[in-house]
Length: 464
Image (cartoon, rainbow, N blue to C red; front, side, top):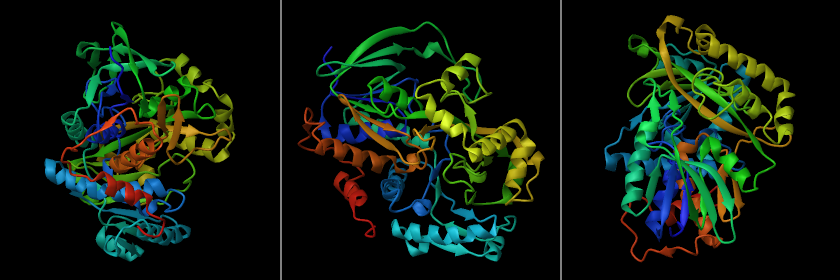
């Protein structure tokens, strides 16, 4: 078979966004390999479902993510209106639960404005202001991001897939990448192919069991974009790049609050993180696009990107993950006393509903354990660890043989994905990696302008 011109590994919101831009700008054979029977079955639908405004992102240290989030807010708003998708402006209070955190709120306001948010979108609140607006919330003050919005990112991704397919992209579902090999002028990808009957949904929360009857085939591609989420570091390693990094997986668990207690709070409530350098989100209260309320998450170490229940299915799997090279990165992380202390707390809040409720009571004292009616959404974050045992905050972009790899693409990744991928496609084009594709003479009409998006991200700091 003729090689694909570009193959994207991963049909989440990141990979689908790549497919959208490439298919809209170029003629060529563009494929997306997705292991599931539908797009956005994992991280892209198991996040908080918030379009985050970039008030908490350093405009210098995290410029690309901040600009991507700021630019994509308007993109998603237009997209939702055009496609008739859920768009629920909820707003977020990020509250200080200790007096020494109040100064952080002031910094957040400065960051939000530097990242392009309007004066009317942000407000610093005193403890009394918070109590007046949300009577059940206790704090030493908050920053109010008024335009944070609840959405359904899986539905967004499905709609974006339809746009990408109309422009010419092909989505090869049920295609699980087993190996990638670099040859002279292309890559060979070995796939395990699964039919719909091979994948069994045990319950409504998709505890997935895969049967053994799989077929295999290989395909060739001239260029690969690795957007594989929890498996992205493995694919990078298979092509000999990013070998200085490893990753650890953390499951974030939520509890649903019964409808009769939704009145406790009408906005998202986050808290200023105690240890922003670690991959632990202090628990928060979330308003979902469908009106549900959830509290969480914790960050439970698990052996793989799809361990949504329990601690491991196979003890050997956990040992294999711990011994995965480079082992030194993980060992260095384990010698961090803050990490070990917080990891212990995270385990406790996974085992005990009472422990989870107690953490949220720090800012919502009216919450009672009996209000938590059933487990909510659980998702797994793949967190990259550097050779010094530090958890890397930013996405890492790594060129490889006939390939480009995006690893560590975490929050607010779903928010910024349509802007971030435009910026990456522009980088790849400027570097000559897409020269084998032919630019479309007449680009399909779309809701988003590529050049405007890229310019917004590239603008000098201070001109947002």
